[in-house]
Length: 474
Image (cartoon, rainbow, N blue to C red; front, side, top):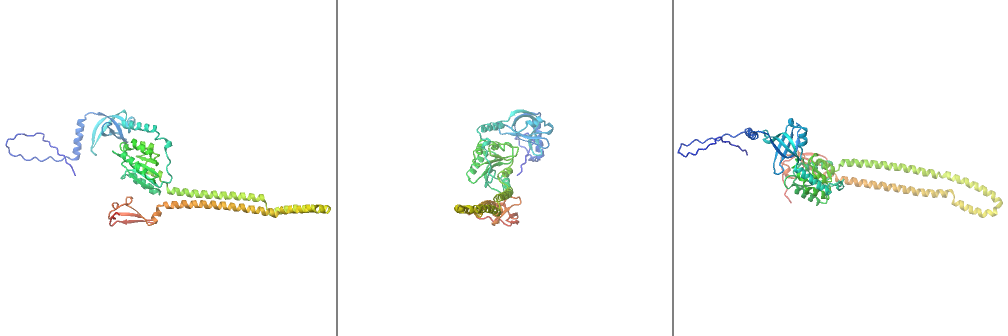
């Protein structure tokens, strides 16, 4: 639909009712072009504001341009009104650049000008003065001090994020880019499932919507961690994340929360109450979803260290066994030494026997009994039995240790294999995506003639849609 504005130049009306000949109907003037309308409004503004005027308000959405110009909005603190402001590079001073920041209250001198290429009203400033802090920034600072005094921002309240989350809750807009970034990173890292609690993230009622979404995720027992986030925006767009009720809901949540609001330069009160803060939603997903490849490499390094440790233990035990064998000595040497002692005693007994045979006969019998107990073969036999017992215990201990570690490694490998998305594809399932990379979840995501990429367990198929037949709901 197009609109045309007609401007009549006839400013006089005739009230003479004397019978006259009918006058011809005047043709309406031709419509103005957009450029003519812009020039007319610009001329009216230049005529109404012949001299520069001073305007005072709060600076919001400040964004310096690469060209050197300064762009921001000047907001009225008592009424819902704002105006776009530009300070050209030729008028920008270091003091102006330090003054025109978000939350500052400034007094600006300039003229309202219509920027014709966009038909946008701008206030072109040539001088700026400080006028104190903005009411919005002061309110946020007061709330920050209040909540900090209650201990909501205390470091000891921060909880560690789970190392192996199975289900990650996300509080954000259903149609924004945040949920797509989180899902993309989670799928790439091959980890947890994503549960979206859709919420309004800006505008009237956004704070209540965010609190309801957090409460919904708290009631899901399987949720291990929650990401609360939205994309970048102005200070007004991020205002819901500075609301007291949202900050208290984040602080009271029993599930660890990661704040991913705006960009790296944006800071809200939710960032202080959350258990962790991410510069972007993608970074938040990387913080909570472990990298399967890194975990696999860690497992390989751990197995290598375990193998080296076991080899070291075996080498140490071999050295200890060699030392024990050296102390015990060779059985032949022990027998030879005892045989030499026996020969000496036999010679002494023979010499004594000739003198005192009758007297020493009983002593000789007792000596033979003691020799039988101390015979080298008996000593060696007892030592061999004891050595065999210790060797059996040592082998049993090593066998049990190896079996326990091998069983643990098998269970870990089984859990990793159960979590693999390729295992799901191997059971006959497939994943269909559109040309833009989004997954096909319903009939509305595909139309006849579209090309769809179908991922199976061992191939990527390009499929052309010839018809879409929605299934009847059960």
